[in-house]
Length: 391
Image 1 (tube, rainbow, N blue to C red):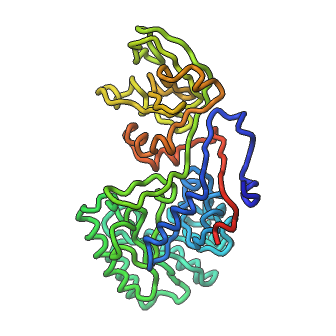
Image 2 (image 1 turned 60 degrees about the horizontal axis):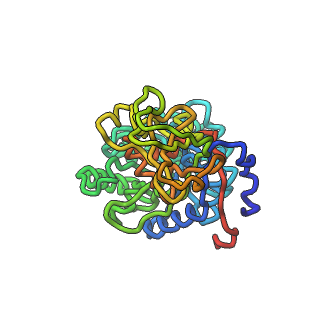
Image 3 (image 1 turned 120 degrees about the horizontal axis):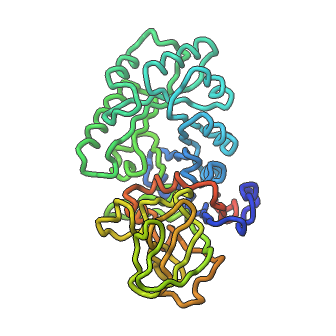
């Protein structure tokens, strides 16, 4: 463990029922790969939602040491946390600017992303009252979520009455379908955004997320904003490179039980055993973000006969049996030698042996949700080589 990160350790993991093994070297390598793919644009990092569930402190510290100087968060609270670990970085706050938080943005040198004309007016008033402070403008090019309209953006660009103290340093938009490379909306949004950047000549522009970086140079502009790929939760369709797994989630075995063929497992008796079995009861459940939808049986998604999730232990895949409950999940360890997995040891939920995207698909969701749903009951262990590796 690098001494620089020792402050992120909290307690010995013997007191936890589950743990996350977080490879900060893999995180830094993923950012460097995305940086290279983004060239000649700069590469930022999205560290919202507590660094996608991995800890905003260790994540921001690692990426800053790797060379990242632009960070995106969702809220001012997250921006204040990121600032503690990235002293000289630009930190953009994306969600909204509400009356009363302007002083916090100024005090911590955070850059608000203005996403409505009401927010623009609020920030202009703040600049008139308190002086110049940088901001960013989000423009809706077709997603219909956040952002001022194209017409509003063009009018603002041409507004000669705009005060000199109102000084955007970035215009940005967000791709709705970047993970579907052939979707026609990608080109429509790109072309709208290119027209807008011409109106805001001299101001940096940002359009692409993780998947958008792989759409090609026409989408890169000045700054890219990868998120999920940093954390190893995105596999590009039908192409290299692939990103290194960053997090391995593991659950401790509480006990191993014997059960006979014909008996049932778990709530609702939804799984009936077809053979004499050994069952590993593990300390993990939906309260920890291990979704009920990945159950082996007994949920609507599983009732159609689709297989549930599997863990990994003793060198084999271990199917989930019955329903995932709040605190416990049962895995089938019948095919393991009896001493291959014992109480107190761990079953991998996702990581190098069980890809996070596979578990997400089993639960009818995406890797983003699994990562950001990781709860406080995991002991987070950070692995990193020396700081010189970032040179």
